[in-house]
Length: 238
Ligand code: C5P
Image 1 (tube, rainbow, N blue to C red):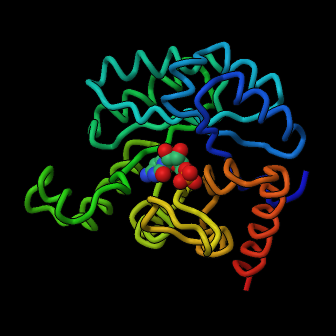
Image 2 (image 1 turned 30 degrees about the vertical axis):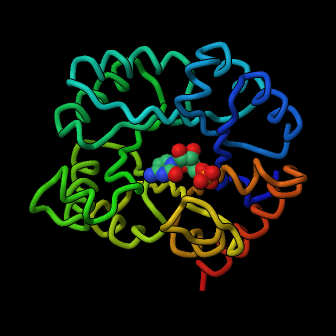
């Protein structure tokens, strides 16, 4: 498997499990990580996770858990049974929720990584002020990244533009970065970078959906991403 694929997560944002399965089969051998979100999990559930795992894929389940500590720790324990590579939790749930999630994961001997989601990238300053009056967004981001580190998360999800801030607030945590697309794309992602830029800035993994799902040849689009990632890795060494 080429080196670039070690850093690429395909966001499998398709409507139905059979469509997802077909796509994964067509990319078999040419993909390592897949992100499954609410839509596909709601329709495909545990059987779909098993099928993806049986295809040799590492699964990133993006459920952004956010509830009282007891409920979240029970969910983590149940989800750890699916052999996931990583699971997301929302930092807004607070220190105790994150710590109890980690304890639940450790208690069942799972090696599933727990990733904190700091501030959703859909917020701008005005919408953030509505939910967190008086706390500027960059400050909230830094504080939540520190909380992830202190609560024992393994990594963080952040925008490519927040990589430097997150690295200084939470050194040692790995970063998973959505909002990555080729320069020419024109869609709803506002805070974007190219795969090469994101990797060169230190992203450990990039999450890419539509630029691959919407390509006429998806296999070729994955190859192109892998190549750009490899270029980014080269820049990182300089
Ligand atoms: O299609 P696109 O490349 O924009 O897909 C990005 C994926 O990353 C989507 O599945 C989206 O839900 C997810 N994501 C995001 N921003 C976050 C967290 C996750 O775009 N902050």
